[in-house]
Image 1 (cartoon, helix red, strand yellow):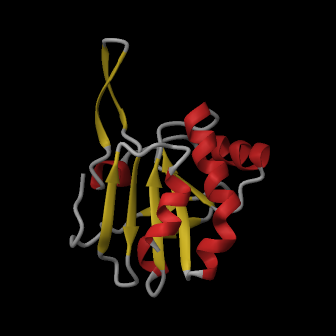
Image 2 (cartoon, one colour):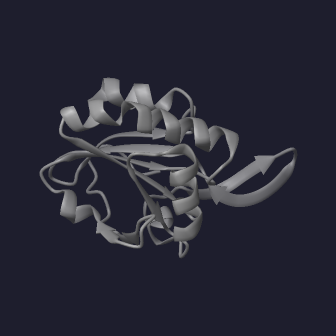
Length: 150
């Protein structure tokens, strides 16, 4: 996991509509960048719906929320429409940002070891510096936790 004080790696990823986003285009705004394992799973849905519900409060504070997983653009679009999500989901099928932010790690589930995305959230300042890094976050609590951090 990357640490506070480090320069956040830039990325170039498509959103749920196929539009490409880079971190550098958000210069001048705080960015809540959260990595999650998979669309339409219980924890990820709770986290996404929480961010969507609180999104107006994030924008009031001059921040944007970006969710990243290795799911496809099409999967993100279905996820967005199913839950009426009001923020940007980025598709990282090549794992470029996922690996750059060090969230692709070994996970253990019922004794089975596999590689996957560890739920992680970064708060990045207006100059692209990581202010806070939260590993192994609790999906349901993460949105309100990040709003408090702002």
